[in-house]
Image 1: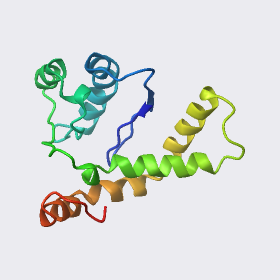
Image 2: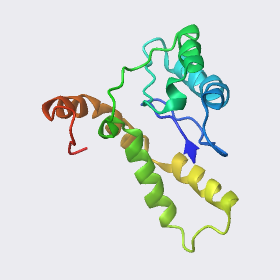
Image 3: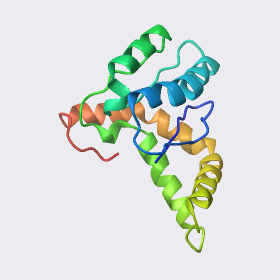
Length: 149
């Protein structure tokens, strides 16, 4: 599993999650080292959009988010259609599948993932993020059900 963050201005490096992602690992390896610096680089209006995965909502993570003064988007339950990062993962998959033959080992796969991640055009990411308003409108129009996104 890998974790990554995107914005209209920057993208974090991919983080390879070895084993299960716990709240402690999410806080120490991802929030502290990748998310907070990225949000600070973006500026005071930056908003963290994560989801309701248990590691993202642990008590320790919630306390850390408050103490770090991170603006966090409220996130409805069961709403994968809203998160633009899901489309980034699809783009990464397509890019890695273009490498024949399949990766020889985990190291090569991680290298290809990082190359593809870095190669996704900024315009593609901006389009994903700028589609958030329409995603939210569709979500509300479908009473929280499936949308075209």
